[in-house]
Image 1 (cartoon, one colour):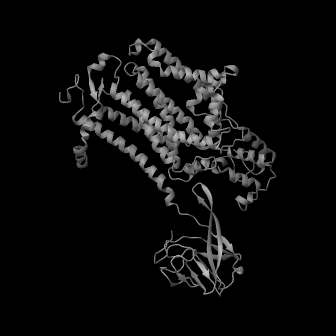
Image 2 (image 1 turned 90 degrees about the horizontal axis):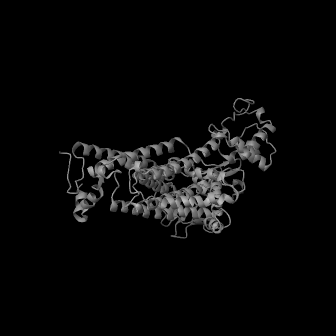
Image 3 (image 1 turned 90 degrees about the vertical axis):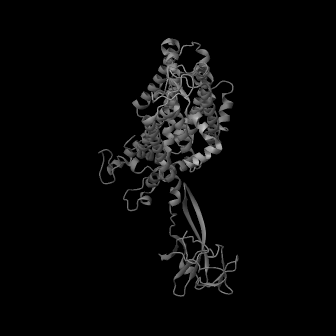
Length: 181
Length: 439
């Protein structure tokens, strides 16, 4: 009998061979594949789904534009509640607001474009100065000196019902052009 | 293939492969032998889905419920993964039950396989411990109150019960410490224990060999290798199990009840179906006899099961020549399934009405809500039909805000504010949330 394969044991163990063996092997592989696929697809989606979600940043009321002095940048608190997974978390940031002579308000991200340090306003020389590596920006946010690769990042802002509203965004430091994170 | 050959030349894998796959099965392969591997498969699936659930789960009373809700509602495939874990648990109890039944029928626990049986019984108890500790983790009302009952039952054990209950609870109340210790036991202690005992179970199986048919004549007639046919049967069985569990996970939602509220004593907890027979038993035993049902009887049953190979000394494996053993087994199953059936009948014959829902319904009538809102064809049609509002808007917080100040959540609504006290507000919300397609 070609389908018998003695292995020298007691009476020998029968092992299907030929096409039967191929069939059993094939079905086993298909079953394993279906289970693997049925688990892998949902589990991969399960793991990566929060990574693909964009953080939604709302317009936040930061101040009344009337209170801002022209030509004197002010650091304003930007407080908002963001969804951190299943938690509601308070997100606290600060933004720099500069009122232009024409009444328009320019809002800058509080991070230096070089490596992300917080910079400050030096009223004496009318310049933004970063303490980490000595980058200097003028009141328009343009680079005056230091390693900063690009002007200060501008944040979307608008005035509605007499209030200044700002959307907070983060940008990648160190690049020539602003890249939103 | 070339990688395999390279590894084989270093590690001598071929001989391992032969040891694993060419194991002779006395009497040949059979579909009746698939239950053990189905159980093993379900355990692996529980382990994998459990690890993934732990990515988002937070084992603290502050966040456990929210994190599960996050998995259910926000995470892609989250409800499916949780569904697999939930139904997989039930599947595991079924698979173990069938595996034990088959072992019992075939007399496969008899010498030389007594130790394998005993390890198997301990494995079964560990799985029940998994079920009990896992039930609390969602921290919803069902979880909280069912565990409360479970712990109180431990408390009825004479002398040591009170102490034992406190140790399990981690203190005076069912709270943060209980949740974190149940979580640690569920995901760290029990898996370690289970994996070691599964290894022992399989090690013993390979040392003594599979039992095969109950007549030695048939067993010695022929023998077949484990691979390829038994592997094929096991694989098909696993695929069937996976398909069933995945379909249940997709088609039967397993929603959360309200967040655990220790103050709300009106909630009637129901344990999982595999604990129902025990739950039912307790209804018939009261007063001084209660410890008999809560711990003496289970203790006796567990001990009898554990030492069964030494109690049943009949050397025959053929069921026809074992009337006493089979009779005892049948009586045991009859009792368990009668209790389960009775319990299911009681649970579903009378739809359970949450007292809060009834009070809410009375408020709905009292404030004349039906003047504008229609429910199942009764009431005005000016405002939204509320027949299935519980499905459309399951968020409790929304309703609480809405009743206080309708315009705050749905601007432009002409619904008036109603002067409700906080308990009234809760009751009315419970009633509105109970208006669902599937009660």
